Image (cartoon, rainbow, N blue to C red; front, side, top):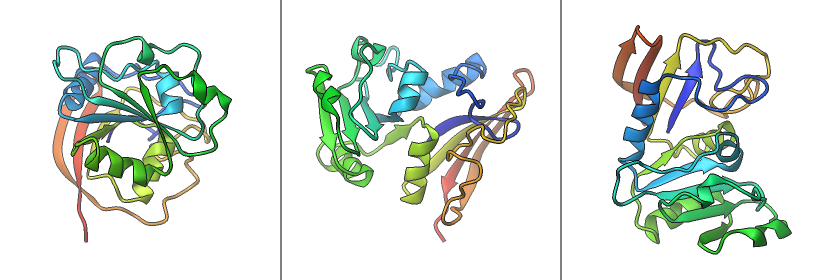
Length: 206
C-alpha cells in the first residue's frame, strides 16, 4: 500500500483534490514502488479522479493493471485504455449496469468479492506482490480483511487540508476500523527541503 497524507492526516480535501500535491521526489518513489510489483491495484473513483494509467516508465514487462469498482460503470474515455501497459483486469463487486458492455475488448472483467479477486491474482495470474494506490474505500476493505502486509506513507508537512469530512486513508474520519492493526516502522526518511517525510511500515501479527 502506498499513499500520501497531509499534516492533518487527510488524503485529499473535501472536494476530492486529485493527486499531484506532493513533491516530484514522492512521485519518483511511487514509480520505484510500482516497479517492484506484479500487479497494481486501485479503486475506480481514484483511477478516474487522478487520470491514472498505472504504468512503469522504462520497464519492459509492465505490471497488471487492476481496478476495483462497485459497479461496472466505465468512463467513456480514460487514458488507462489508451496507454500501452500491463493487461487490464476490472473487478465489479456490485450489480453491473449495461455500461459494462462498453469495456474495450482487451479488458478482462471479473465479478465477485475483493477476496476472490486477490485469490485469482495470485493463483491464476501468478502474482505474489500487489501494489495498491487507494483510494480510501479500497484501503478500508483491505484493512478489514487484514490483507495489507506493508504500508508506504508520505507525510506531507507542507499541506493542511482541513475539513471535518475530508477523507482519511481509510475513508470517512468518523468511521473507525473494527479493530486496530499493528505495524512496525521499517524505514524513515525525512526531507526538510520538500517538507515531506517518507516512511515504510510492515505488518506485525500478534
